[in-house]
Length: 412
Image 1 (cartoon, rainbow, N blue to C red):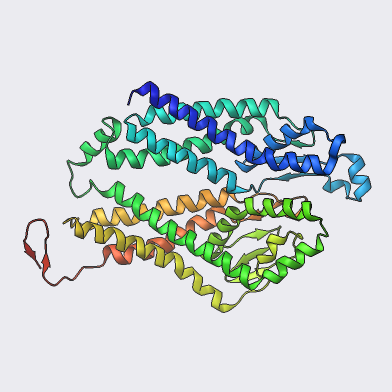
Image 2 (image 1 turned 120 degrees about the horizontal axis):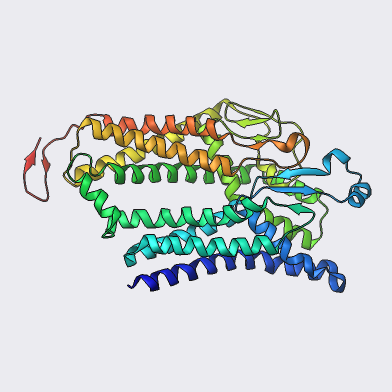
């Protein structure tokens, strides 16, 4: 495929990804505006609101300053009238990253992933800059540099995540092939990068899947608390729909909190609070229905969940070691140690990134600190995956007679 066509297709992908994200916000907001305000609606505020929420969904922190009239009418303390909101709903970010990964993979299969990724990121940056410059909001402010930078950075990371593994497995006739040719000079080490990425992906998939299962179990066990919090809002049908959609957008954030809980460090919902398998210390929790899933006490049995990342690491080690044996490869101890360390480091880095994206401020006062601590999550997850992967990757394999399908040789 011609490079120009690849560049154009990647640019179209970027425009479509940004447009879908904005339209997904504009459509329900337009309905809310029409029902709530009718003919007196200030339609000029609709676009800035959608843009601000779109930026927030890509990790841009919000600085909220409530008007004095609203503060007096509601009876809010003046000290709580200005606060930051920086725990984003990660659903939009996940959508952009997945869409960008598909675009990067298609560019890699077409044979020019660098041009495709660069084109998509630049076009997404242009759309982000236009949205940031035309969607400024007086009540809710976003730092302009971050509002312009964060959305295209998400797209760029997603596109690279889709393009580089595809180019590594399919070849690109360029820089990736040159790296592979250099590694082929050391046969024992040639498969280390690919094994590290595969192993870390398997370990993270296992831990995230376990986090999803934990959230589902919490929903079954504490569904009554969630319903009670919904009823306490005394919202009409429109309000319930808005709250429900907002909580749906926060579901990936909740999954990351579940990952931090499974890893051991847990998360906070306010200064001086902690929710972890070792214990739960909570003060006054905001009356958000989704937070009704948070356990208000701990059990000694909860500590068993820290074995889940160890099991995920063991699964990753088994997967890589089985793949090596089935391919007729038996690398030495040093390459296997490198694979184990690489899986642990990459898993820890991914855990730290997810924790950083899902941590921040939920409101004024003590709510300024919420979410997991990235350093603690990285350390715990990395060590747990290291133990599990090390057991399966470094333990001696005792075979009977192994028939090599490719050569017909018998090896002890």
